[in-house]
Amino acid sequence: MKVGIVGSGADKFTEYGEQQARICIIGILVDAMVETQAEVTMISGHSPMGGVDVWAEEEAVMCGAALDLKIPEVNQWNPEGYGYRARNLDIAHESDVVHVIVVDEYPPDYAGRRFPICYHCHDTTHVKSGGCWTGKHANIAVWHVIPNDPQGSR
Image (cartoon, rainbow, N blue to C red):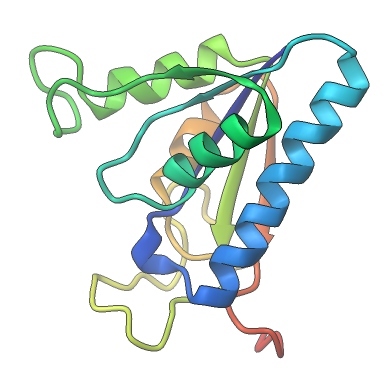
């Protein structure tokens, strides 16, 4: 089984959010292994922003899953050559299921641009993530909204 795991960059997670995302990733991989009783390959994009892509790589190695990393040659959306768009389409189309791991709210110290909704999927339950674009192009996608605050501010 080929399991795509994509989502938000590290800067959108609190320490608590990262812990919850890693627990989610482990659950996804273990469930796939138990369900299929076969080798699981984790497909992700090795984002230069870190976060879900890189945590998925680390947890996949710990769980014994094979890796299929779609690493862009050019860190741009749609350049000549292999960029983010081509990478995301490969993840979406080569995965049996894509899991999109996003956070419910920005961390208090988040310094990047803030959007009132995720403009990729028009959802207000989580912050914008390019992972949503990938999920929208997959045959099967499952969203996981991770709380960034243990008290659950939403």
